[in-house]
Length: 361
Image (cartoon, rainbow, N blue to C red):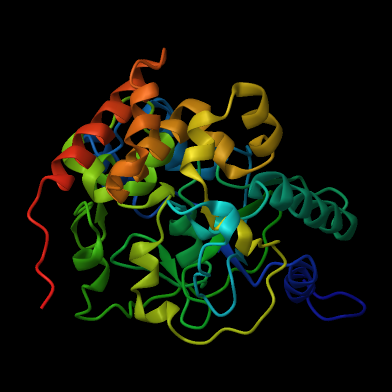
């Protein structure tokens, strides 16, 4: 569609998206998701774990019309997050000597309202250009197979770690979509894949959650275990969680496509002091303080129970016997999930403290 000034509607849409902080913008036709059959098979394998909502809304993910009836176009958007260049800062003293790591995306305010606000602005802009157009912005919570449409919109390929990878931006990206019932001119899909013979992500995963290239068993994924999993964590997996308190970035950090220097500023706020949290403080924290400190962050997703459970596991993996008295005080925590994690941590520290120590030459 040609406009009187500023070029095509599609180009002006991309420019507006960029002004709103989206690093990437592409347009895909609103047809059935490319990998819907694979998604059904993935669910049938039990890889979704306790994420029951994925089963209950599975059919809705077949086609974007479940979100907007009469949808014609899916505008796919990506916003960068984390530090530029991607590099983890050392823990600050405030995080304590047993600091637990937080995924880059969570070292910031909750991304949902931040991105929704910008999606709503983009929708209003489009409706000003095309007054009869209906548009709906979605990010993460709608039944949409976002990576399918991002690839179809030319934003990158789906890597062996199952994440969308852009050749210049890498994979530290939030995906969002603007669905509309106007027939925008689509972009060419990203037809190639550039993972090649690399298997760095599969080899680096401590829990072997990537059971095959492009296949993630979420029930083994550290991000799933520390965020979406609500019950006690299997001890055979807990020891491999290491120092991850919330989420995990390992399969992205080892990806060669994320090693290139990136000096562009992301629109999404990033707080390096939040990369590390004090697990001791979190274990002691009551509900009121947890709500005050974390209600507007991604950590709220795991709730106080999940974060305290994770904190106990981090302390167990740190293996410092000096914290045993504190853990023993919490061994009868009224929450059975936290109690199980604390008792596991006590056992793990005791076991590690009895192992033969290396001799100093």
